[in-house]
Length: 571
Image (cartoon, rainbow, N blue to C red; front, side):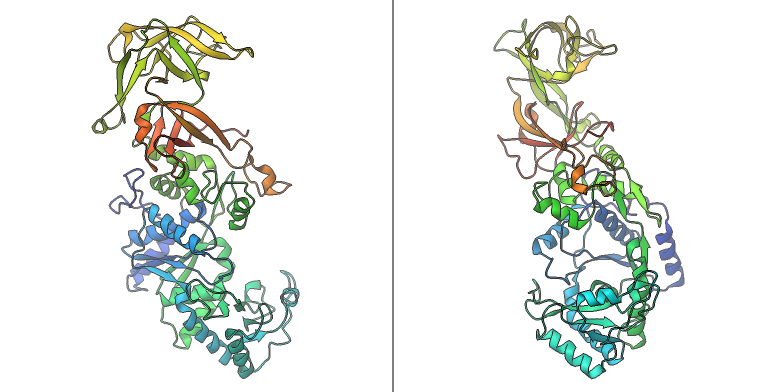
């Protein structure tokens, strides 16, 4: 796994950091390096299909592929598997490029498209037909499915399997020229319909799609399938180690067969890339299926692909996760062949660890109750300061005012205190952080019995840093005189059970109704200039960032990325 940048939430990965511990993929690469198999080269690739936004599972693959290339002095290609124009969109493509860059990795001159190889892929398909290793099947999709067989029963040969090479070449050319309707013909490799590996039962390698492609226009009416395209694209680009998740393990024999046939025919170079499988990332309290993520978006159950409750990288970025935290999480998850089920708390912990030393501090009151300090003169104020970052003196100080009217958190006052409650109580004292000690003299309630105002007095000799007396409780606050009102969105886990796919009902029935709560908060004046992607620790409340879409000067909107402690319980 890639080394983690010590720059916290910064962008580029620092290659000088000590490399991560070894794993089985590194051992394979080390052995290849020792034998000189690829001339000492390490070339990996990240091959997304532009049919959706990247999610946290893709981040593991990005960090692995780009990280290994960095560690071994090689390169990693970003290659778009743009072979199905029905489902693909330029919006997704641009988002993928943006997220790879945001994570701190550079593809620069190593940007490729499967569509770049359409002509060569077509020629190779003709080669397979000529060799009697591929045929055009005119069965319907239902017939092909019925004849494929099961895990315990062999499949049945297509009645069109023994067409002559000339007839197959002619039909394939007609498919390319758009003379056949979608779904009426398909090109299949001629392997073994009795193979115990269903992926080798005459797999389809070309389908008809009368759909324009965003890069090739209407030049093609046939498009290659993933298994066929992927292996050949790897070989053309001289990929050395083709890393993919475990669900492709059963596809590896087909990957190897296609390449071996083309290498033997002198059409591709040797040695061929090696496909290596690792376990995919399964994260609790979320779904990772692109189909389900798309359904959430299309049905309006979330606000979009970048909804901060989504585990898409765009959503995590908008929520306030940093590139450094995601790289740190990927490193901690590690690489193995065993199926992994990772707790959401591990992802949240990585963000806390990344931000603790770097995030700017500020005070914000999320559930405000007014405090009137009766012995402080109206119209006056006292200047107060606090460090922007307690771990970095060079970051300087932030300034705010103490005045007669301030706001504190409602939970920091208790009329009938429980044992061990050291915050503000009737007749008791508490310190306003970076300010003075105040004493609660009396309270005022509304008709429903809810406290509306706390009347207090302050001790002028107890200003923070003055060396005077102290009390156990310290609470945060914001003065009305210079405080700002802001919308604060308190995001939580999108689902209220660990594995939404494991329940008896539809996964959508487990959506957490408390996954988003919006409050109007009072925040200190230093936040007036908050910029998107800047991280703040709201003292005692958690880590927050200005919403990159909705927050503007004079209309501040902050998202809670994570609480300060891991104390989550299902709502």
